[in-house]
Picture 1 (cartoon, rainbow, N blue to C red):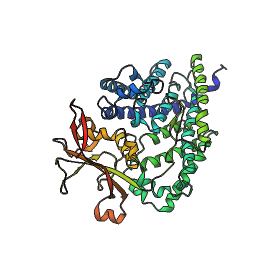
Picture 2: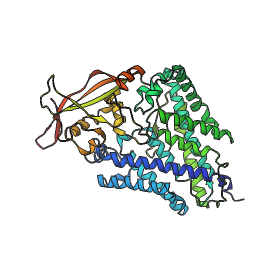
Picture 3: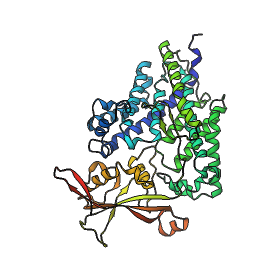
Picture 4: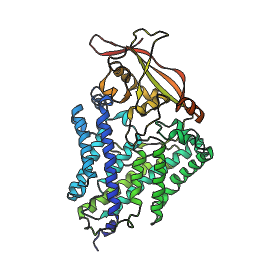
Length: 483
């Protein structure tokens, strides 16, 4: 028996194959989101331009390939390269090359996406960005079909999904009282950031069932994760319960790839041996074994601060403790809103607003707007602007950096910005004025839906932004003025 036999096993070859293909699929979605949205968000003429960010933030806080060079063309090249490499790994390219080359392919994917996240600013400030990066970093060391699967790395994946689930469970119990009295789902389906096509129906489930849902969620997040570290078949049952819970969340809302990464992380804990006979794979080389052991020591060392955070009464959600996002802390919905507010942006081609002015509404792709439009399913695709609009409706503080630039670009009919929207009411010429108003949205009842055909009912709360026009300074720069 060689010294490294204890941490590598051919029995996990199918677990590794399923995990790697699924993770590559999520990388593909993430790079597509970056490639198709970056120009308006963080491009050279974006709302929060990368070059300006790099000038004011030191490299040690945000390491990125774009420190060497930034242009929109170069960013697009990196994003599309990541998408192409993801496709290659989905197709099995990682198993068709030597071990070192396969590891390099996964490392390039991780570094490209790290480079994007670290310059993405507010638009990339979501927990699932760090989760994808942490998962992707571990994937570098999983090897390929040229060697037996490293058991230590598979256990590190279980450790990660444990922290994701247990952290989310703790933040709920410690947070909003409605999680403790089992009433949070009276509100959550209506007030969540971006509802899906079935969210209206979930909201109207009987309240006793909502209480059962919350109780089941607590069990899945606070008890089941410990069972991931038990022998089979208990670990498989635990992973299956996590997957089922995440699929329930998938059909009830749009949470980008948060649920999907959690599902992918749970899959290696399943015993797949009844479904396929494991081939006899070669033992790993010594250099690879040393790297795996070094990775394990690194992750365990970096886990100290996340564990302290889990045990703290002041637990933080979705926080990275290092600029490489290697080991992070997670959690979601420590607080559940009781009321849904939405910002509605409107424009007019009249230069002087009056009582009879006709205002035409901009429609977003995912967030609620037209009360008769049923929300669509976008996840795992991430509509970044739509998500930030939800935060802006909670408090203008969340929109301080980017809302003004967004209005400027609507007043210019900026092509890249308009591509982020579902409908531009001014296709031929820019509007003369743009305003924003805050509405309270609630789901209609079954009776209201039958009589009006509307999924939402909305009531005006207040003005969010007064009518604003675009004027230019002497040096030709745009400057917003109230109309």
